[in-house]
Image (cartoon, rainbow, N blue to C red; front, side, top):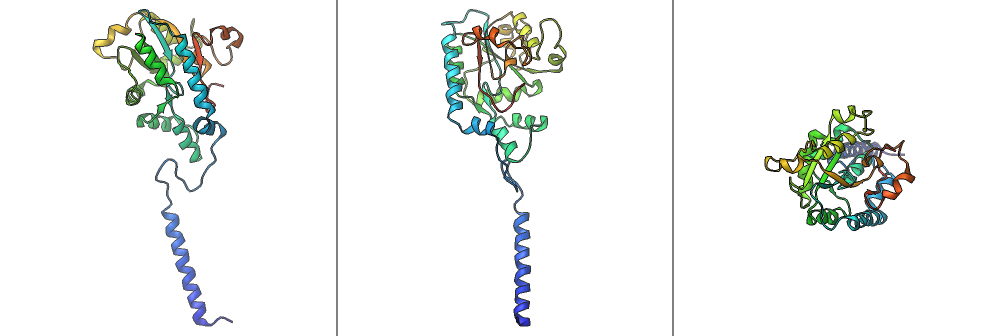
Amino acid sequence: MLSLNKLSYISKAACIGAAVSAIAACSSTPSTPLAGVKSHTLSNAVIYQTSSKEYPVLSSFVYGQAISALPTRFANGDVVVMDVDETVLDNSTYQKERESAGLEYSSQSWAEWVKREEATLVPGVAAFIDEVVARNGKVALITNRNKALDSHTWNNLLAQGLPLTTSNTCVVGRTAEDKEAVGQEGIVNDKDLRRMQLTQGKIACSNTSKDATSTWAVPHTIIMQIGDNIEDVGGVTQESANVELLMPRVGTEIFILPNPMYGSW
């Protein structure tokens, strides 16, 4: 039988242990997006995008093929239309942070991520854009990021060391008008209006300075479209796209990059 002294000692020890546990619990509050009380399992899609060897191989291959399809020198008015997310900028860190914390996409968290201007480059894209610029080409970055975030997109792109200027690059995010235009003649997805404006010389580049306005305020000819989603191609939707009809254009004027993390599918 335990003596009263021993019982008192054990009781005190238990109280001290409980206090220590309570302090430890209080100090485990997450301090970073990736920290958390509970560690959540990443989806195979995010693991593939962030850790696999297949992803950079495929992405670099697609851009290598796109370089081979470029004209030796761009004609005046010729332009390559590109998506931004998972086409130029790699946002897998955002996806990883959200999943690690057991959270899903939200427009607020996405806007906060864009404002951090921390996205890196998709494998192969730097070499492609270097070639476009070297061949006197232009790039129209038609993104479904909210147009109000375009300045952050531009800053992020420049921070990655790409040879972009307001003369050779147009950044244009999505507005309510783009979505409302769907269903009008020749407009079936929410990027079609901006593609049409580009060909008409009416594109509203968010990054255009006064001395470069004239380089975009003229009709342009789209010679290539690159994205990670079928709707990055003009005139089609996920539901209406006819793969057999598109295939003859793939590898010459249409290039699609892998992105298992999210899409219109």
